[in-house]
Image 1: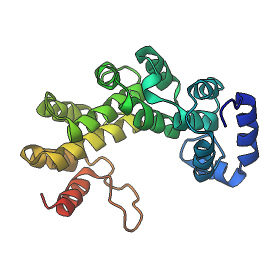
Image 2: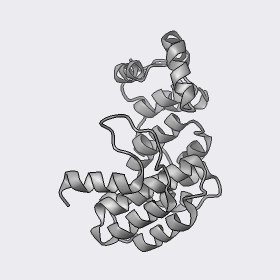
Image 3: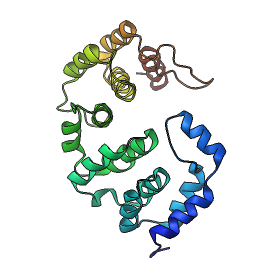
Length: 222
C-alpha cells in the first residue's frame, strides 16, 4: 500500500473506531477507540512507510500515532526528533510504544537515556528510566547500580505514577538480574511498599518488587 495518504489512513482508523474499546482504553488513560489487533493488521498491510508515519504522528491523534510507530523506521529519526516526540506523547500507550518500539532501536537511545533520566518532566523521566531498565537487563557494564538503588530508595515512594512505575521496574530488574544487589533491592521494595496492594489477575506476577523479584528468580533458577 505504498503511496497511501494520511487522509486515507485516517478514514480507515475512523471506520475502526469502537465505542466499547474507547471506554476500556479511557479507563487506562488512553484516548483512542481502535482495537489494537485491528490496528496491527492495518500496519501489516501498510508495511514500513516512514513519510506516512511522520504524517500520521503530526495529526496528534493517538490511534494514528500508534499506527505511525508500527510502520516507521526507528533508525530514521534524529535525536531531537525523538526528544520532541517523547515530550508530545502524553497517553500511556503512545508513550510506551514510542519508547519500546522506536527509541530502544535508535542509535540515539543511550544519549537520550542519559538526557531524559533526570528530566524535570516526570513522563520524560520515566522514558529515561525505561531505557535504564533495558540496560540493567542487557548492557549493565558502566551503570552505577548502587547509585540507581540510592535514587530509587530516596525518590520512588513520592514519584508521580508513571515515573514511579518505571523506577519500580528498574528496582525489580536490578534484583532479578544482579544477585549481588538482590537483598538490597528486595529490602527497598519492602520498606517503601510501592505497588504492594496492586490488583493482580490470577496467573500474573505482582508488580510489587519483592514478589516480582522472587518469582522471576524462581523461574530462572538463579
